[in-house]
Each structure stands twice: as C-alpha cells, then as structure tokens.
Amino acid sequence: MEIKFVSNIRKGNRIGTGFFYIPQDKDNLLTHGKRVGVNLSDRFHFFSKISKHDNRLGIYAPKHLVTENNLLNKNVKIQLTEIKGFYSKISPDGIIYIPRDIIKEQEIKPNSIVLIKALKGNKAIEKKYSKIAAHWKRNKLEYVCVFDKNFYGREILFKIEKQPTKTSRKELNSTIIKLLKGMYYALIGKNLVIVFKGYKVPAVINTNLKYSDIAFYLGAYFADGTRKGNSWAICASTFEQAKYYLKMHKFLIKDSKQEFTISYTNIYNIEPVELKKNLVEIWQKEVGIEVNKFRIRKPKGKIISKWNKCGTLIIREHRQILLDIYNKLLKLLINEIILKEDKNLAIDFICGVMEGDGCAPAKNRGHITIATNKEDATILINILKITQIKFKIVKENKNRYGLRIGALEILRNFRELKNKLFILYPKRRKTLFERLKTVGAIKFFLENHKPTNWVKSWLKNNNFCDENSKINYNGLKMGNILLNEINKMEVN
Image (cartoon, rainbow, N blue to C red):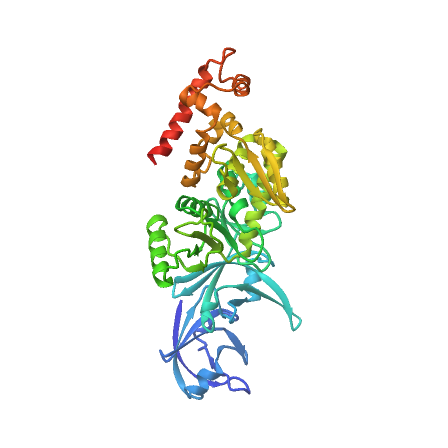
C-alpha cells in the first residue's frame, strides 16, 4: 500500500530531528507503530515507524537529512510505503538488532534459528540462516543475530522466518540425532540441517547418511585429517584421493567452501614462479580445482623415496564447527564398530586408514604396515581385532607404533580387501601386488609353485587345497581373483 501527500517538516525535538503529520483524511489507513518506507521529494529515502504527537499520527525524519538539506519548515512531497518486515543498520561485525514486537509476534525465543532475508523492493538480495541471541542492555532485553558484515553501515529492510526445530524419526535417523546432540539445529530442506554451536560459524550438513557411506572416508580422515586446532583439513597425496575426499566432504558438508594448498618439497630447486605455475596447471587438469596457496620446502637429507612429484594437496576449511562434526562422527563410528563388532565397517575403516598411514615396506614379504602413535594405536588395535585379520604390534619408540598385517592374512581376507587396499593410491597398490607375487603361497595360486611344508599346512587349514596339497575349487577361485587383480595393475 502506498500513500502520497504533502506535509510541512517541523521541529520534532530539541536535537533537530524533523517531524511531519499525516493528513487526517489518510491516518485511518495507518496505525500507530506500523513500519513504513518514506520518500521525501522523490530524493530522500529512509525507514521509520508511525508515531504520535499531540494525538496525531506522524513520522520523525532523521536529523542529518533535515539539516543537511534544509528541509525544516518546508512543504515536502511525501510517499509512504507499507513494509512487511523491519529495518535495521548492521554493525561492523555483521550483527543486526531485531525489534521486540517482531520477536513477540513470531514467538521467537533465544537460540531459535531463523532465516534472515535482506530485501530490496520485493526481492531478497541476500539470505542467511542465523541463531537468535538475547542480552540485557540498560535494563532492556535486546535480541540480535549475525547477518553479513559486508552490509555494514547500510540501512536494510529485513524479513525474518522462524525455522522448525521439532523433528521425528522419519526426518532424522539415529546417527544424525546422536551427532546433533548438544547443538542447535533446524531443518532447512530435504536431507539438510543447519547446525550451530556456541559462537562458531554454522554449517549445513547432509542428514541422509549411513555409517557404511562414510566408514572408509572417516578412516582416511583418521589418518590424514586434522582432529585438533582451529581449522578442519585433510591431506591428499594422489589425484584419486583428492577427488574422493572432495566428493565425500561435499556429501557431508553441503555449504562447503574449501581452501586448497599445495605442500611441495623442491628437491630439484625449480624456480618458485615456474614451479607454482606448473602445480596450478596439473591440479586444475587432474582434479578441477584452483590452488590458493603453496608451501614450498627445501629437501632434508638425501632420501627421496617418499617424494611426491605433484606435491600433497591440503583441503582446508576455517570453521571450527567442522572439527566438532567430524570428530563426533569419528567417535560415533568407532563406537558403532566396537559395540556391535561390525566386521564390514571395521574393514572399511582400516582400509581408509591405510590410505594415509599404510605402506608395503618389505620388498620380499608383501606385508602392510600401518604407522601410528600410542593413542591411536589403541583404537586401531580394537578395530583390527573386529576385522578378524591377524596382525602384529611393532613398538618403534615411546610414541611410534606399527601394526603389521602379513601377506598370508592379506591372502586369507583377499575377497574383502581386494577392492579397498590402496584403492586411491595406485602407486602403493601396484607396489603391494608386486611384492605379494614374491610370496610362496601366492605363487602357488599363480604359478602352481610347489609350497613349503608350513605353507601346505596353511593352505589346507584355510581350505585352499585338499589333503594331498592339490588346489581345490576354493583355491582355483582365489587364483582367478588374484590373477585378475594383478592383471589390472599391469594394465594400469
């Protein structure tokens, strides 16, 4: 609704604020306290509320507008537009104050989650989910929320929508309910929930997930992710890892905004500008990302066997709440594996850990070693026991441990492991298979190699050959599987 008229700008108070009356033939169209947009002389615009002065309705005009444009005691063309919402100036840190009548009208309580829309005309120019905070100031309870500091200094028209927080089992599964415990959250779409915790920047997460979706990924995060500090991050040593980690992070965090850093050891002393240009191009080509930062290091020592010619990609987000989400998911997954003794989840998790901390170090043995520390070793030992894969604990020093899985154990569990061992690290996977081919028991399958007595005993005990050490159906099947996987490696 729009109302047009001419009125005289008069003195509204002692400090120079202006005031004009609304003609009596039009004041029945407006009510005291109604918010309106005001245009003066088609040149000046501001937001205000209908006020009362001498029992007549009118509007106060800002002092600076009246004095700077010499409007006092002048007749001015005025246009009033009824607004739906409220107006507020944004502080330097992006905070806006919400009128108490809006709070009362929409039954908004402290910690309620709302959708704030900044409007221009009837169109939203910015939207943001925020959590309502309340504090006492001069014996009055004030309500505020965070919007966007880029709008600082601008007087903006806002509309606020309270978000539903009541959920049912149909909307959220038990995993998500456990994850969200202790946080404030609201459903904002199908399979989407926005999560707040303290003063941390919120995150939008996917509620449509199961432990089986994330066990391998969280294993990789356990090995190569940050679990402490002020930022969330995970490191990728291969293009395959980078693409998978990005895919899974975006699957979990629906408003992800990653920063990409390449860590590179400059063993050939390449000129930095040329080096950075080359790294940007190759990671753009292979992974489709734009690298933001670089960490160029000088080599230490002469051993370069672990040197990565394309560097290591660090995927980072500077939101502390992501650390809370990932660490909570890790804890929930580990508890699920241990309490339910879930072998499938345990294998997925351990194979994910191997992506970061696993290697095949011995040239003629074909075993895998997981490098870890004292604290993490306890967790990994408990999970490895659930996989039913036998392993050996190697203590290298006070805080450095190795969990060694022998070649025969890899063979015994090969059906479950074949599609998960270093699947994102082709070089290590190829190295592992090359070294497995040197193992006597595997030669038995691939080359009909005559096994030693103890290998014969092992093959019989695991139902790969009969009492006469002749390969049986199960053994033939295993041989075909091994040959197929090794052929894949040779083709690649």
